[in-house]
Amino acid sequence: VKFTHYTKVRDRNPYTVYEIAVQSPSTISWVIYKRYNDFHKLNNQLQKVDGLPKLPPKKIFMLMDLAFVENRKKGLQEYLSKLLQLPGLMRNPVLIDFLKVPDSVKPMLLNDPSSHTAAAASSRAVSSGPGRRGSYPNKSYEDRKVFELVDALHSSPNKVAAIADFEQYFFRYRPRLAKDVVRYLLIGQFTAESKKGGLIQTCGDSQYSKVASRSALDVICRLLDVERNKDAHTFVEVFASLGTGQLKLMNIGNHIEDERGSRLGAFRLVSILRDRMALVSTQQIVSNEGAWSLYLKWAERKRFVAPISNKSPTTQLLKSINLAEVPARKVAHDALKSILEVSEMTGWMSAQAKRYQLTPKTGEESRPQHEEHVDGKSFDGPAEVPPDPPPLEVEKEKGMEIEYKMHSDLVVVRIRCFMPFEVDTIATVILDESCRDQWDLKFHRGQSVVRLTPGCDIVHYVFKAFSSPYKFRDFCLLRCTTELNGSRLIAMRSVTHPRIPEQKNYQRAIFYPTGYLIVPNDGSSQPIEGLKSPSGKLLRPESKEEIKGRTRPPATNGSILTFIAQMDRDSVLLVSPDLLGETDELLQSMRNLEKLLEMRVARENVINQAETTGAANKTL
Image (cartoon, rainbow, N blue to C red; front, top):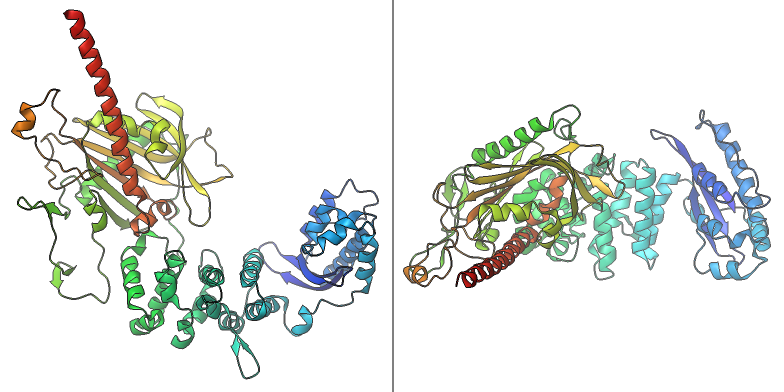
């Protein structure tokens, strides 16, 4: 082994990265990058090894001092060289993992007891790097990593691994790159002597490898995202300054049309270009009418997803309520009141939103005329800038209404449908955590932890989320329920409670007042015509023939179930795929709820009928 170079990383906690050239007895060579902390961890794992050399001590101050860094490099070089001379240590899996020994070399080391001697000899024989540094001797460590990636994209048979290695390095060490280096990373270099494409060319070359193409697009998205890259503004500036011809090489239209690809990432890249380029130029880059149409549909609803922005979220909204400071009774009262206020504010209680209705004659859906609406005015033809989206029409056709509104950093979602069941029956199933996973596709697990009062408790819910970061979201919620003029109101609000601390396996998220409003459809509220259950059952009165032939008590007129969710930019990721039309889990969950209710009601009817028959037989 040979320490060939080091780089000072001036972050909030500065440190030094050492470049180490490693050569095996079979002359196979590679390069690894390590910090002092990596050596310290290795030393702790090898404490039981006899004759373990002494590791240079830690230091808190003057870490960036040139003399200190040079002395530490020499000390680490001596430590690693002595370590490799210990008998049999080269077969230790801890050291093999530390040196990142290639799979082709591992069998030789594991089977040859004397390999440590050859390794030590090769360690003394290595006087320079394995060629990587020699290719760019005048480049800094950060720049060489970029140039090496472009070389790998040009000649390596495994482009996916090269992209993954660079991505891991970049987002771990956060190097600061100059604009010309960022440009080289994106488009490479095309001259008479050299024709090397960068990430953009790899992104568009799906014929070579679709996986590599998607990997390139994903890493470009991460580099342009200010929430992941502190220098994203530099990358965005360089990216948007590239000519239309260069950006067309991404074949971004293909990514949009490929349902199994990185469609969402492609949408976000188009949004960045659209904000910084002329509309015609952006259309030329997409270069596909079908893909452009898909993008416009997504753009209508893109406000659900946390935007690429330098604005920090509102800290006041992101707080859970501390029950040690605010009485639970007040939290419950405010949550219940908030849901009613939001419902009235958006007009959901009066059911004035546009719906498709069944015509009396044909029973077919009567649809609005084909026209766009902007600010109350109608016109023919598509709009250059999409208007604010109406409630999702696709879901309405299936029996549900899904709507949303934006308030600063708050996203409000409403789902409404007709359920042919009584209010209490629906509320009982919704409040039962033991059966929620049978109908809610987004639900992972949950339980009631603390019962505060007969109508109020603390619950812990975990919901599935497959967006980055790839962790399920968990919620510590105060849940309360109350009866309101024959209706039932179930409300939940994020709080902090010592019985439900944050867990490593989940990411704690926030629900502002969220819950269910279940209103009986008995004429006490305004009628809601044309609203169907998730399975498509239309609310209608019983016919005379049905009344005459009825052998059991009359069925309920059903209830109107309204779900209201008030979420922040993180928790909205649970439902954003549904709002964007990428999945239909919300619809399927409501259908599952209706089926579960049908089974429960049918079972109760059988039990009641059996009890009635038994009582009648006893009377006889």
